[in-house]
Amino acid sequence: MRRRSEWDNEAAGLVDMTEQSECAVADRQAVAGSADRKPSPSIPAGPALHTFWKGRVALYAALKSLGVGTGQCVIVPAYTCFAVPLAVQLNRARPVYADIDPSTFDLTLDSVEAAWNHHRGDSIKALIIQHTYGIPADSRVLVDWAHARGIGVVEDCAHVCGGSYRDNDGTWRPVGSFGDIAMSSSHWSKPVSTGLGGWATTSNPELSRKLDSFREGECLPPTWRESASLAAAVALRETFSFPWMYWLARSAYRTVSGFGLLVPSSTPEEVEGTLTRDFAKRMSPIQEWLLKRRQVDLAEQVRRRALKAEYDSALARAGVRPLELPGYADPVLACYPVRVNEKPKVLELARRRRIELGDWYRNPVDHPTSRLEIFGYRAGTCPIGEGAGQQVVTLPMHPRITRPIVSRTVSFIRDFVRADSRLD
Image (cartoon, rainbow, N blue to C red; front, top):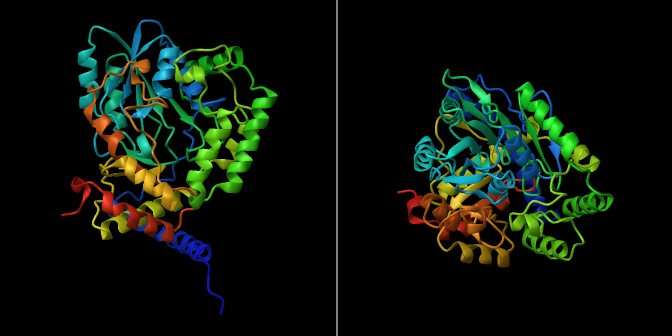
């Protein structure tokens, strides 16, 4: 009999996980008393989907629609991509940073109130609630707090691919259905990917009208070259997107983008926090087509839940504490966060051994140059977010991750996990 290759074994592991996942999810819901939950959409529901060239443009549009402008402030999490405060500053407003919860990596009411009190004399116009890694923030508490003070709320659903939040009455509601506007990103690393891209949605007719007016009246269409370049990059990613090629593919993309041969994730002007005439663009037809085709369906949500359970079990067997979640959160993870010692060393060793590990945020404001002052962040302002940037790596959740890959990844990382993340 022919010996199965490593990839054959991995494929078998993926099939086995998929076959068992429906039962695993049903069991978990029964235990949690949440059988009333329904599958949550990967794209928050609304009367219209307002699509843009990048997620940062969608966030810019959302803040603009809420009336954010000159001299005002927006509360943002101090564990995020620079694109978030960029969207604030391009609206001529100022980001105010609030620290995060060390377990969920999301904003907390205490941290938001601390930021509010520290800037009580300023005009706080909006709050951005990020559901980090797909883990729901305490949405009801934060939204009620904001609305009681006349503050608009944007839910940043860039990491969301489903998932639910338990409301005060015990019902489970989709993540992204609490704020005034929900926005998301379909960047390369996101659960729903169109290469670049983003969208915003709202149940408020007036805000929807403003979003549509901005998109149609102020946004340019991408150039033919930009659309063709993005389509080529998407095709290359589909061809070479395997875990063992992760580090090579990432390096190659950055190199080729640097020479202008592919559309970069960020322009030099965006990195410097500068608004240009062509910043605001609509989605291209190829992005629109991909978005419709790649929405995360129930089967993918089930697979991701099963994969989280695999990581939980593998980490526990390795003596590592699995991800701990509050009772209100039922996530579908974009990736699985783990705290490690000597993060740069861990990532370098992973690269050499061809083990896929993510490094989504290296700082409270993740920026290509680490010049956080560009976006108004001062070192020491939010120590929990700073610690997370120094410690957290992410385990991948995409469809090519199989049981053998989970086992190999956890076996690699267990020797680097921080002492406070180990099981007693």
